[in-house]
Structure formats: structure tokens, C-alpha cells
Image (cartoon, rainbow, N blue to C red; front, side, top):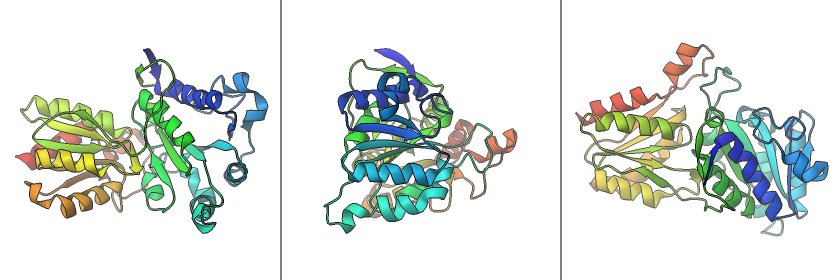
Length: 324
């Protein structure tokens, strides 16, 4: 079993699928010769050559237009949008074409397409390069939405995404790129729509995603020192959504806390709370609580950005207060 960074796991994941299937191609800005702006695609051009690893112009519409056409004609493209904020530039292609064309052709045209992107804040990139946009994607019928929190999950979920017949938006949190974790040897294949219970606990259930998972784990450690044992559920994907695992954990603990990096208004945690209150209201011993980023553009000033994003300390303090 290897120790890989999340960054290196991204390159391994793409290489695994390109070795597995000759129809898998990879395209995006600076993904080849430069190895990606976050150095998460190093070595791919050397191994697979310029026919299958293609540097593109700085045009999100061109990248996704080419990827869409490739998927329609039998290839399995992985397309990179450098920062997830830039989905705003090509959102029409994603929402009105890629997400809907399989449905509108009655299945005659399929879209085995993965769009991967660096998502989230915490690195002082400012309001236009730090957004956490998974809630944008979750609202669009026809898209699958994945956000891994560990290097091993990145490899296994990427494989599942590439082999899926539907378009998948694959969000890699850029603050996680330097984080190391154990990744099993050999090819990995996970399944979409399966959450993981990262920590067991009987007093409360914390549901988190991507970079909020390690923060939730750190908060749970702090709370354990106060005699509060929290279960931590890593959703891993928002569409499909593993409601069964969330409901089972809430039924055990009776309390629900969601930890979301995206802005509070219309965040994915609101959907989780809605599902739990509709389907497991009787199991709740208190009101669900959402711990979120405020509904504002993310500041670039270090102290302000840290204040806006949910921290382990804020998560722990919020849960301790609610349970008191």
C-alpha cells in the first residue's frame, strides 16, 4: 500500500483509466506539458502522448464542446476546468447540453464524460477562484456530482466516474492536494452514491464533504475530549446521494449536524436536513443544525477567509453548545 498525496492520486486515477480503456482521453488547459496548474497531472503526457492528452486553448467553452462531441462519438473524455469557479463561463454547455441530451434523445446518445475541477477555498485565491460550487451542480438534473476527501477515494471514485454512462462533475478540493493518505496497490474501482462512516459515535452525527471531512474529524476528536462522541459521515457524492447511510446514523444518534463549505443559502446541507426531517423526524432528539460558510463572496484576506470557512474549532463549539 502506497502513501500518496491527493495531488498524486489524481494523476494515478487518470492514468489507471487511460490504461484500462483506450477510448479514455484527457484534455484541458496546461494539463499536458505543464502537468497541470496544481501539478496533479504530471507524467500523463509522457506516458500517453499528445493524441490522448491534449492541451487546449484558454476557453472553457471549447474544452467542454470538444469533450461533449468526443463523448457523443464513442470516446470517454476526462475534461479539466482549471478552477470550479470557471463553470460559470461554460455553464450553458453543462446544464442545457451535457446534462440533458441523453434524455432528449431518448437514450440514443450517451455522455460517458467526466469534468474534473479544482474546487473550494482556504488558499487565499480570492472570491473568483475559491468558490465551492457543488451545490450549483447538485441542482441540475442529469448530472452526477462527486467530491472525494482522501487520495484513495479520489482514485476509486474517478474510476467509477469514468466508467459511468452519465456525465459526472468531479470536484477535487485544492486545499487537499498536498494531503497524504494510504492508497491500496493495483487498480481501484469504487461505486458512486456510497457514503462512508469515517468515525463512529453515539451522541451526534456530523455529515461533511471534501475538505470539511478532515475538519469534522478534528472537531470530533476535540469533542471526544469533552465526553461527546460524534459519528462522522463522508458523503463522497451528492448525486447519487446515499440517504440510507445518513438516515441510519441519525437514527442511532438522534442529532444531525451538516458541515458545508458552500454558501449557506440553498446549500446541500439543506437538502440533507429536509430528507432527515421528512423520513426520520421521530428519531431526532433536537433540531438539525447546519454549519456553513456565510452567504457572501469569499474574502482573500487570510483572517477573513479563515473566519468565513467552517473551522474545526467552530464545528466543535457549535455542536457542544447545541448538545448542552
